[in-house]
Length: 149
Length: 490
Image 1 (spheres, one colour):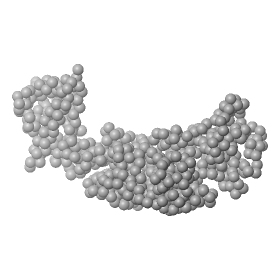
Image 2 (cartoon, helix red, strand yellow; image 1 turned 120 degrees about the vertical axis):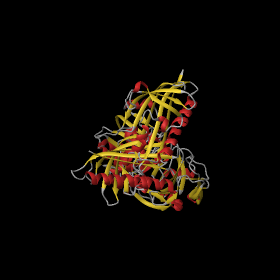
Image 3 (tube, one colour; image 1 turned 120 degrees about the horizontal axis):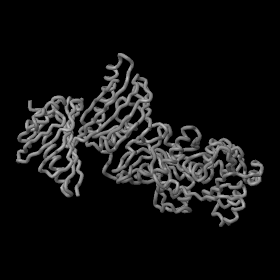
């Protein structure tokens, strides 16, 4: 038995959307801005903007994760990916990271959402871990990185 | 195609921002460019397909239609139907999204349209700045400043819920009996609970049933209590979970729990309907109970059709006048009974082609003459004991006797088998069974308001009394000195 979980997080990044996009569009670039990620590489030597490429990265706590790029849009500022392997115990995990310009103040509305299945009873814990631990902390780091200068 | 996108972040939770924006008619409350707005055809502002007709500060008129409204996406799409500005094929979408790490809301407004050649930039800027960005600023100010402009121009704190009971004046029945038992005094309206709103009355309708309540002939309310069955007012406070009614909306009701003779009152939102702008508060207060009754008698209990012959008793009375007006407009031939010669003209003015003074003429005989012996298709009889048997006699074969009251006293038991002589139908409808859900009330008032707007129904307000003079109004009503409808004004 599995439960379906949907996670939605969002934040306002105080920088223009094209600048934020330049930072996050690199599918191999997580270690440069996300505090949980130690290192990353693209399997098979593919370029990181080749749709279908797989990134393999290591978390600071030692776990490793493999994710496949499903969609990348420079037009929509959008990136969709799926987890192939992870220690988290999630199935059919698909996540979307999307940026939208806020015309008022030239800022960025950032959304990060995911949908996945997991063992019954773990929904709450995983939603919390992914929503707060991964996505929202990523936004916080991104915001301080983008506004540092 | 020109595309315009503007977005902002409002420092308020998405539910609050959405509760304002999802009302397609709310823009005149807060958008600085919009002076007046109303929804056409008596539709509600959250009804997909509804059209808002509004005017700008410079007097220009626009019409826009709601194409999509989604509470799950916090988003709606609309198009321009008519505008004095050359924006062709204009379709716009407003979308809200929550900012999950702050108590804030992302608000995006995007549109696409065509313009005459060369005007693209100028019109794109106009839309972006004068409409979208002006809206961002105004609504943000409204949601964060702690005060709001209501439709009648008065300012009051936000959130609209206020904490304490509101004390106002009302006419309270002290004990069953005469008009002298109606006393002016303070009444309190508590803050609205879930599903409730608090309203401030603008006009209250007077009905003969109020006299029955006062004397105790109908035990609908036990004194001490305010009387009154219908009114129109403005919403001042809105409780949790109320859909479709906003602060500042003008609303009306009929046959709620007794107690309309008050300046303000708290009641379930489900009993209320929003009154279209072109119907005055006095008209609404005067017509709700009688007009809704006429609606279900003519359209639901019996469906009157073009060419039917209809007999209306008390054709110059409150409900009788509306029955005559409406049946005539449908195309029926209306025969009516009245109590005296001076009411003949009243009945005639209301569409009754054959007024019969029942004290001077035998109405069964007159009906037979008028219909060449055929009889009438339907009789509307609220007189009761004095007329019931004769009403049956006036029916055509397969006719329908609708008994909706008994002003002259209880009706004798009837022998249903005898009805076979004409295959007659008899109905004894009860207002409550036609108005027991908000959907039913809405269906009735939609048609009622439409009929008013189209001029099918006319409300004759014969006299106005101050609310505190309700006892005088009762005296006038009981001594038959009133004409048309009577309203009490707080």
